[in-house]
Length: 132
Image 1 (cartoon, one colour):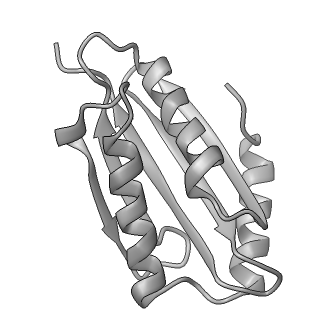
Image 2 (cartoon, helix red, strand yellow; image 1 turned 30 degrees about the vertical axis):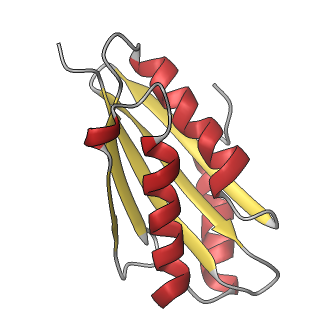
């Protein structure tokens, strides 16, 4: 799986957080809606398992969770979530992410910024294994 190592991700995320304002209001709502739509549309994810919420915490403005679809290996589901992040959900100017996979689940931590010294979005997606 690709993505930044954890130290690089943390450095990049901190740079975004300190260089611009956090996304809020309708901008953050739009990102929340996009996460629901893209994650629910993945074949590798159980659509009814997708939950997304916004917070006011600069280091995790979006919190999402989902489960692998029946018969889908956790690593395959996590890779699909990562691809949705890099191909559709991130802002084009700048992004960093780190995917961590354990037997209990996967976590995609992410940060993205819309432009120089402009708003940013941070957060994570927890991917659980498919139900037995």
